[in-house]
Length: 292
Ligand code: NAP
Image 1 (cartoon, rainbow, N blue to C red):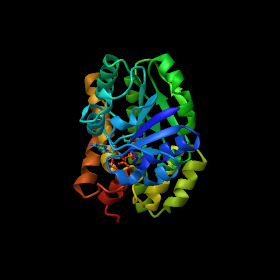
Image 2: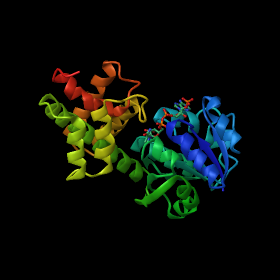
Image 3: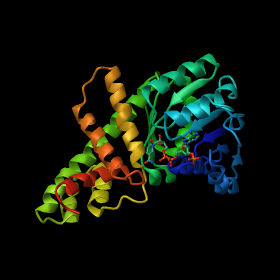
């Protein structure tokens, strides 16, 4: 397919690479143009503006947050005025439910189609085409996206025809991951201060009742205390808890644990943790207990 790709950050770079490898004709755009260089060497066309990446059947966005989407879709040289009628905008970023609703309405008004397809998996999964996608949108549009989803993910889960459903599910997933990070951090602070080796403790957990990937990945990061370079930066994690709470407020769903996580991220950022992986909140409990 002819496809545009907007946003060559930690996730987008690997996803765009896999689209090229799968034989799609890819036009890439990144705000900082230098990140496109090696993709161009692999056969991608480089666009100077988001609009220039729109002479395609579908354009995929993988951008930091709502502000980035606002700039790239509705700003000067944005895609809303450039994407052909019937072409599809596939939004893979973790954005708010409200922004997803705004995009759905704007693309419909422009005669274009909009599919939300946020992803689960860190940059290594993106590079290995092993992402999981939470997908929602018009049935035919979702079907048309199939070859693109196959190139970047190991499986896509279709959740309905209203795009924002996928964004709500993605936010709920990141809330769950952050909850695991916090609870692992507290448990490890406890046993660590009690003199237990954290790697032996994690081996016990993940070989018995807690064998899910989320415990293995984040348990390893917390036990090792290695939060740099960030695979998923702390400000993006904070953004996801903020967006979870915004959705919860709209739907009037109290989420006391999400409120606690909001404060954990604020503590991390206030203590200079912007450059760290979001799993660094998992060391706050140890710090609070006087451990280094
Ligand atoms: P990242 O490495 O920080 O990349 C962010 C991308 O957004 C870059 O291409 C950046 O361009 C662009 N951008 C930021 N602000 C912009 C603006 N105002 N206008 C235009 N472009 C802008 O982030 P990432 O880790 O790839 O994450 C991307 C999205 O995927 C986020 O929504 C994140 O929550 C989600 N996600 C991340 C992970 C993960 O583990 N990293 C996993 C699942 C989902 P520049 O290069 O010019 O800064």
